[in-house]
Image 1 (cartoon, rainbow, N blue to C red):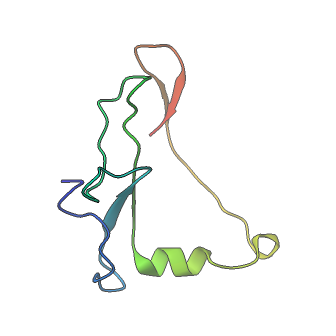
Image 2: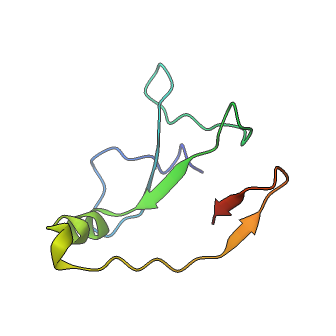
Length: 79
């Protein structure tokens, strides 16, 4: 699903897209296994959400509400 919804620039303003911290040699999103040496790092957003965040950080408060869980290696993971 990550590769099928990868950002292309052709998305409409409210269409969700995924992005990763690195890409394969052919430009496709790199999807790791989740191990420490091969992390699974994926983001999901839309153009509208990114535009709303594009402002002076001193003018707003970013509130994040999520659950912290301990995974099998005993450190917190933001879910």
